[in-house]
Length: 115
Image (cartoon, rainbow, N blue to C red; front, top):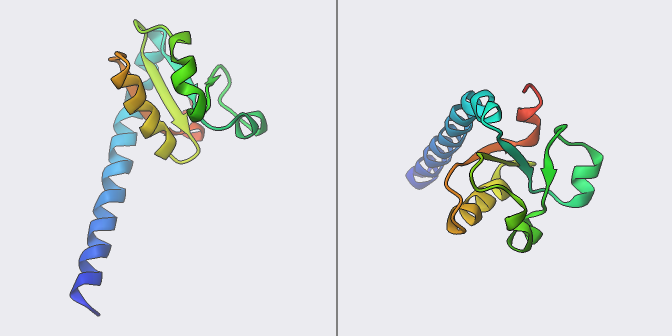
């Protein structure tokens, strides 16, 4: 096998492990964040959210986030989620660039169902 392919697989495995570890770290914080009044923001589409969602979460689709960002309280933690964690990563960056400081990417909305 070509060495470049091996390095690519190693890099991909390291990236996936890092993403899972960071999601695990956020999920450990969720109970405390919710006690502080944390707001769960699901950035999936309206259709995806309507099919299934975390009870109590707020649906603000990623494509509407910039126009609706002021609906959320900047003084409370924000926990963003989506289907895979990719859109919520973009949403986290959007929140941070708009002055929100206590923002956490929980990855998938399903991971929040145990809270």
